Image (tube, rainbow, N blue to C red):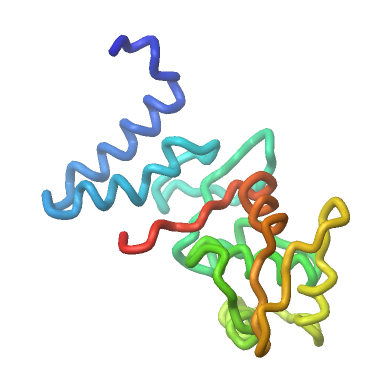
Length: 168
């Protein structure tokens, strides 16, 4: 494979990831690379947690999003409205376990963990959240909601988020 085939940005990301992975135990190197592969393949820039910046998410200037810690994840979006906060915390749940249902109680606990105010009726906020006329969440019964196909597409295309792989 010629050097010219690999775009410089991907080559840079691979080099950065390699510098981290080469210090790991041989038994977990493959799993660590699988965990970091989205940074190589997506439009997100890979940066170690020490070099992360406070820039806002922008389609033209993608940035690193720490999906491991809900407080860092929330801060990277810095939503202004309570309804946007619901969307961001639901997006965090999506990054953790995909399109599975989540309980309203889980969102309430995330609001408490992040330390921001929440809407009085999170359920109504989820029911009324739309983009391009399509509902982003659907009622999954018993106080649970899950993202619709449109909601998943919104997370993937507009927010550049993907669910993490299970078992890694």
